[in-house]
Image (tube, rainbow, N blue to C red):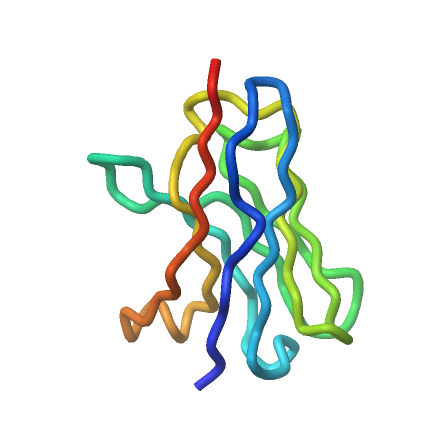
Length: 119
């Protein structure tokens, strides 16, 4: 079972940037696509962005709310997936998680990393 540890969260002002990291304990190219999710207080966990991890450039998908502001990327050599978040908004405040679908289906989640955006 590949485990994932999220980091890089913190406090940012509206319009600012943060870069989140998702470090895997094993080879991400074997896990399938990695997805970033977030959960705001009182709300359900929601999809943010995903990237394929097999060889090649890595196909990406984004939620409409973050499209054009967030960029997901990966480094297969380091087994890390990144989420570059620019032009942050207060509504981006949430705990951010990363996971492949296998872990999601088994309800296995990491601690996540808190992102707080002030207006």
